[in-house]
Image (cartoon, rainbow, N blue to C red; front, side):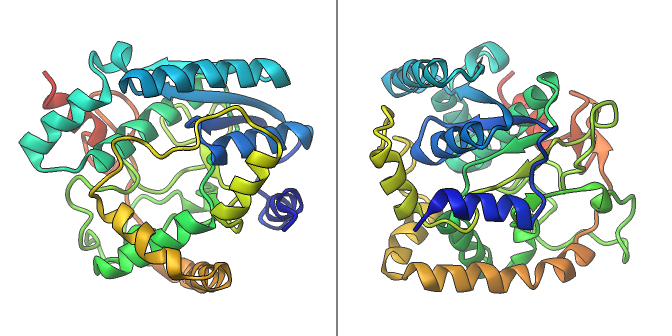
Length: 306
């Protein structure tokens, strides 16, 4: 598979990025986010990297060093946000506290905090688009996980482009909260992205886009190794014993063509799901970031760390 062509086609077909956009790539340090950063730079976009130092010991230190070297090598600016300076503690301590206080998994807590930081810092960097390295396998896993949990509404933002001005709403059609959205969850911290431009988005979301949306993880791995990217290829050391890990292992027996069918068929349901998932977007009274309620999920997490 020519994954550069696939990524270009996805960008063009779904109008993900314009040449005039300031593009910030959310870097984890893994093959997917590094590959998409490298490709977008090759394609001639105004791109830079944004990475969160989760404070997970030697694993985070190695990622920081390798990403700094990689970005310097291709001439791309890189911003690293130290989680310990933002929250006072690394991710291991935070997830242990939330496991004890709210019985939330480490992946859930990490996902909520990372989305909050990425959106906040992307706005600081003046980003028009926030790019993530989510691939076909990630999206197929999301579809099946949400279905098996009995709440497909959690997948409402599972699209190559998440958000847009058309998604800005102030009231749900029936005035009711969709089931499963009342408490902290593994989904977005505050609902649909607003996709607002500079000057309009100070209290909203930077639109997130996924150029690797239809590319299998196995093909990205081949690409990264073929380009000899000097990165860590192992999984996050904290990602074990979770529902996603179990789903990923189960889906290893599913072919890439079947994953494409799962994702594309779910895309047909997205318009109807979004009509049922229209929510008011507020400004969190604690941090000023967008929220589904008076206080965003990240600030709820902060309250347990005091």
